[in-house]
Length: 257
Ligand SMILES: [Zn+2]
Ligand SMILES: [Zn+2]
Image (cartoon, rainbow, N blue to C red; front, side):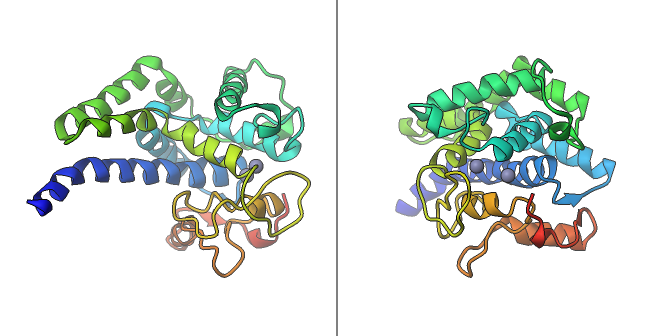
């Protein structure tokens, strides 16, 4: 009986965990480490492939690799100042920061913001997916698919409370780091801003939470530095480099972008 219940609950649990990690993977690998920081290069084919993957995995909460790349470079350049697109210093709560970030994101995406050329240089742009992913009907269609899955497989009412996390997965992952990793955690390096390492063992955020390390060594493909700081995205990056889907920049360990 008990085993039967676990089995019944498996579908929702698996769906949630898969969506969480797949969405997080494209965010950290493609949007953050590639589009914004260019820690590695890839051919135009693979760039488009990962663009499509970002749309598939983030679905209703698709984040534009272009706008993310530009915004994130601004974040590193102006961290914790008034020009930072998202700093907890200038918001009373997490939702206010998310709301402000959304406005700047839309300005950059729709070319309404004046952005210096260096922040846009080399940031990928694939018009077809950008338009498709940002289309509100497409976003609603993804949300409907998630809901239908829950209607089919949910075994208790409270499971439906997880649905909003699916709807907003991409921005939620961003906000966890941009808010909490600029407020709480430990510091390995002295930096000019409030970036901290949120978790000593980052199994929840795929290495993203080693944010203090990352603000210190912006071009370093491995976010973990201390022996216990395991960055789950890094072995995947090494593997993709080994099979030549991407090409890690030489000495990316030493880059101080
Ligand atoms: Zn930061
Ligand atoms: Zn970064």
